Amino acid sequence: MLTDEAGDTQQGLHKVNGYRSLSKANCREQIPEYPPRHSRIMEAQYDTRPPSITLLTVAVTTVPVTVHAFPSLEPTSLERWDVNHLYLPLRRDLLHLAVVYEGDNTRQGTASSKTRYDVHGSHRKMRPQKGTGRARMGTKQSPVNRGGGKTFGPHPRDFGTSLTRKVYDKAWRTALSYRYRKGDLIVCEDGMDLVLPTDYELVAGKYLKDGLKEAYLKRYMTGVLGNLGLGRASGRTLFVTGNRREALFGAMEQLPWEGRALDLEDVDVKDLLETGKVVLERSVLKEMIKKHQSDLVSRVVMQGLVKGGPKLGTPVIRA
Image 1 (cartoon, rainbow, N blue to C red):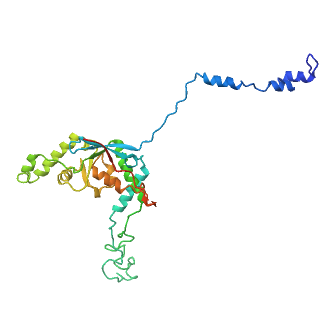
Image 2: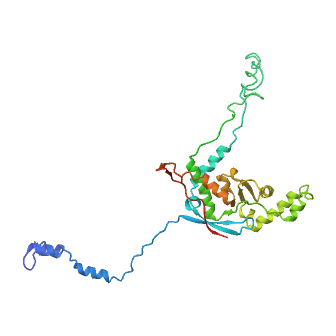
Image 3: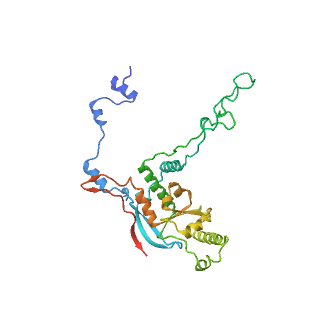
């Protein structure tokens, strides 16, 4: 048995094993000592560490939209639009649903074929069942015969699918927001049309015949689009107007590889996504947003009032 100099066996064991004595005095020594409260306050006052910085984030509620003159594309005014109209985040799932929905509803579904009961002719048996040495044969309308009916052939049907209106409307605004974020959405004043030279107007009806008029429009429009950066090099351009403009539509029909022109009623989500640039009138943009904001407008009447959507373009600066 181990003993220390004082002959205490228990104390010797504690020293050998590296443990302190379990006496009350040693237990008190193990209690940590904290500085008094006033000293901690002084340290906080003279702390040399840099103070923490709190950043305040401000939510963006509107985005600027520049309105241009056509075809010079000179800025004429500046408007403020709500972020729910032209600054939505990209949602590929909504765009995919909208494009598939539009494609399904534009399918004609007119393919039709005749079954064996629709083919003209008698339904008598072609030859006896036995005795000829050949394969058995029924009527001439059989699908195995030439000129016979079609087995499980196509018939007219509706390929249209359904999509929630709020989802479709948000997909519309998502497509416009995608164009706006990339800088490919150009808003012009109302009455957008191609201004032709005065000399052309004088000689077009009398002298430009036998394809010369179309050739001149093609050459002139190619030069205009090239100077504005809206031609084939930019990925084609979509022009959207409130109604048909003869000069603009006629010129773009001669240049399908440069882009195309559509009126508002013929535009869908796919048209906004498949070209490089989108040039539209201010009234057209307003009409698009107004028709496709059902998820922003409430139909619940509270105290005789109905919650409307955000404002459609607030003028800020006018030239």
